[in-house]
Image 1 (cartoon, one colour):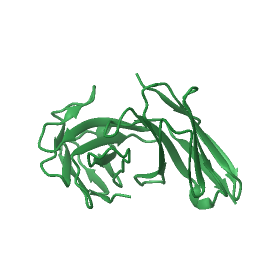
Image 2 (image 1 turned 135 degrees about the vertical axis):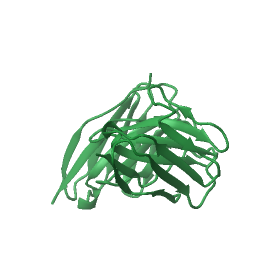
Image 3 (image 1 turned 60 degrees about the horizontal axis):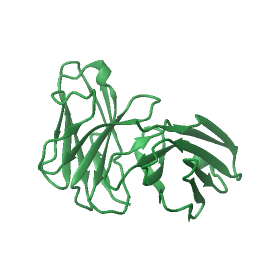
Image 4 (image 1 turned 30 degrees about the horizontal axis):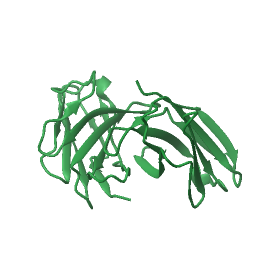
Length: 111
Length: 116
């Protein structure tokens, strides 16, 4: 079955860049997502990338996709304290299909 | 992004009672609704998928008679946890899909259920 893996924790200093990595096993993955979850809150869609793309940039966020290695990363430039949260990567084989989530990476931004 | 409203945000109930959670898509029509749950310090797991006007499809290990899903309209879906037990305590989150091929999927704010 599908499997999505993420590192558990990342600590970064305010102003530095953060890079969160994710690997997945399903070669049929078509859409790959990054969500942010703050304590006690739901999931906020940060960005997503279609599998025929290598990179997507949206303001401070850059997503890189290596389809051959099934590796996805999220880079947050100029990390702020408000970026402290849990970040989930997820994959789907088609629009409107269920998402399979990674375990989440807790990002702690230190002043 | 899309506006998805869940109610209640949190609920505490006694063991054996039933709890209903509502999910509304406020600015688009949800032809499909996904219901996920998240246990403490864990990731989200899909419970069931429902299409408007049809019976829900449940994931393996999720009891359909315990978690009743109603998706009678394009803007409202409900999840009822029947005869709740402490092990049902979790964070329940809905995710509506409008049928478009954009890939975007949004989530509600979640409903935290605590069963005493």
